[in-house]
Image (tube, helix red, strand yellow):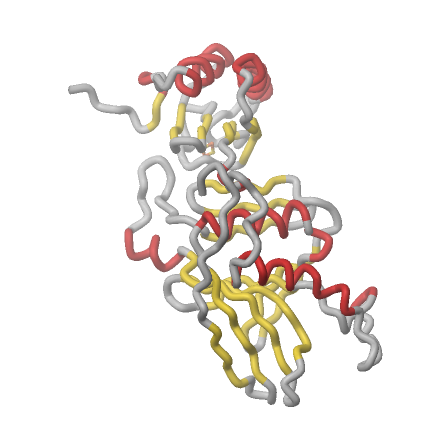
Length: 292
Ligand code: FES
């Protein structure tokens, strides 16, 4: 996305589909590359989480989840956006999922999992009046992925259906703002750098690859070294990082590097030698790089 604020190039694609029970749904597509979905989803999950609900709607099944506080984690690992709250978490494939350090995911499956279409939508009643607003995603197989419900001016507290003639029109401000930025491209994306692409270091805390689970000294060593180096880098712990042996395992998202057998000394070297000087520590890399 570069260093300056950019605008989305509009797709100018609006598709209207009739609904089986009357009315219709109107989709306005926007680009689904990470330069667009990253800032959009960061805004919704990290900044406007109180106004955003997660959904999954197919005939015969509906799921609706809301945030009660900001998510604990909102990062991309191996193509999947992961959002973690106190009660639930979600994964959404925004970039190709290569399949861990050994890149095991077959190319067809990578394409199937990857988001291929994104739309801002409005559901309209028989009179053509909009009654609900949201965002829908589709995968590479054309299947509906999750959707996001945006604030609805006809709903008050606790899903209270307001009198027909008295909608809270101010609730449409989020939808209108997103439409201006991501569908119409008449306002710039409000970030200089993609907030979901901020690099991070993660330490696996699972017992399969590290039975003692004393990962704290490694996290502390990474945090101290990052601070000393003056880097803007997030240090965190995570579940399985798909190596599952020779722990402690550390992952650096900046260039997709996995390290095994990391101790505090190696942790400091990862920051100083790899991140600062650009020299990965060869004998701790996973998979091992064959010489010659
Ligand atoms: S359990 Fe640690 S990498 Fe899988």
